[in-house]
Length: 162
Image (tube, rainbow, N blue to C red):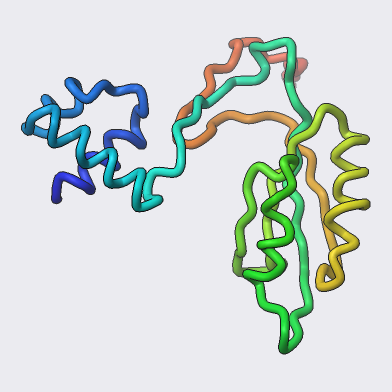
């Protein structure tokens, strides 16, 4: 594996590694690591650095939903055109073209179910090529971006025995 691929793998594992840590793990010097990171950012390979948050442990848990969208394309409009209209909405945390029963998968985040619902009905559904939306509210997250969330250990189900 080349240094670039190894560096990306390490940053994906933990974006908070210092250049000193990365250089040690890669067996190279710190200036080479800094140069590689700068190049990756300039090329648009590294788009940002984000924290993985277990919202259950905060007082500000947002409402998140997965929204499936079906579209009908015409000669002038392609998937990229529709995506370009949707990516600008701050409520959309992720937007993916997918295979299967629907065309786009959106992750939407807002302060309430009503806000998510209004966003989908007032901003997403009116896009002319979108023919159908299905919204699934996220009830619980057990793992995000490869990081498992510890449960609180409480199992609130009633035990049943024969």
